[in-house]
Structure formats: structure tokens, C-alpha cells
Length: 206
Image 1 (cartoon, rainbow, N blue to C red):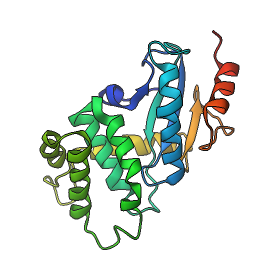
Image 2 (image 1 turned 45 degrees about the vertical axis):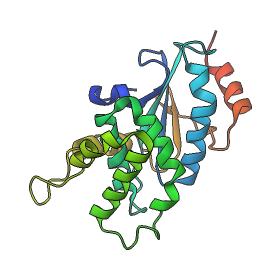
Image 3 (image 1 turned 90 degrees about the vertical axis):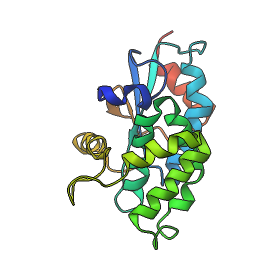
Image 4 (image 1 turned 135 degrees about the vertical axis):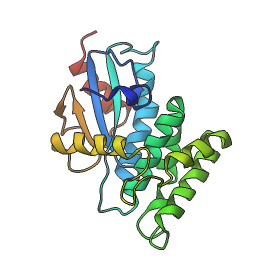
């Protein structure tokens, strides 16, 4: 499916953008099932779609930010991912994995007494720890309120794009996976190498 050009270099996390088949994977950084699927992407799918992989040039994976507003911090963690996509697009997936690994720190109760500014500061520390201290200042600048009183931050438009994309495609929860534009309900966060291999053998002719 289509992807906003400014996000292509970051959110295509496996395979090449011009690959004929697409897995759109909608994940929420504070969803434990999304974290499980993220590990499968890293351990199973990325090697298969890499230049020397079995399905090189045939399939790509697009990370789709799935903000789930019933989790209070979901907006903030997805802002963080989108900010990294701008500051260091080549580090987007590395930061995403770090965020999934530390997701419990952003669950409802741990952040219940933090202000939005404090949550963003906490995320800036994760940026420094996971992808480099030099990324912290530009990341923080993108998440600093500095326009009108209700104007959002510098990645608000990117956040709106991801939310609108999910809404118009009827994506309600994470994780949700689309294969070539259609929801693949059979795909589960519990899938490992065997299940993914069987799925791809049915879908992709070699």
C-alpha cells in the first residue's frame, strides 16, 4: 500500500520499497502482542527479505504506527517513533525495538503521574541510550511545543497521517497485518519461523 514519501526510508523496515508484495504491520509500542510480533519481524522476516534472503526483492514490510488511545501514553510513544524517523531514519527500527523492549515503563500505571513533558523527556533518554546521545537534542526539538497553544509538535502532521491511514482502512487494534492490502486474520503475534515460512510459501511464487 502507499506510504507518505517522507516516511519511506524509515518505515519500510524489511525488503525494498519497490517489492511487489507488501506486509503492512500495524503495531502499538505499548501493546505486548505487538512486541512479540516485532521480534518475529526482526528474527524471521528481515532475514528472509534481505538482499541474500529467500524472498529478496519480492516482499517488503511497512511498519504502521497504530495509536491506541485507551493507553494514555500511546500518542507520546508514537510521536517518539516518528521523531526518530525524521532525525535518524536509518535508526528507526533499532529505536523501535528498544521501545518495545522497554514498553512496560510506558504502561498506564508507570506513567500515570507523569506530565506529557516528562514522558517526552523520558523518551529522549531512551533515544540517547539506544541510538546515540547526538540524536537527543534534535529529537527533543521535534517534540517541543512551540507553535500555537493547541498546535501540537513538529511531528503532529505525521502522527495525523498514520492515524487517518488506520481509520480509513478500518484498523481497530494491534497487531493487525495486511497482505497486499487485505487483512490477513490468520496471522498471529505468536507465529514463529515455521508459520511464517508456510504462509510465504503459499503467497509468493519463487
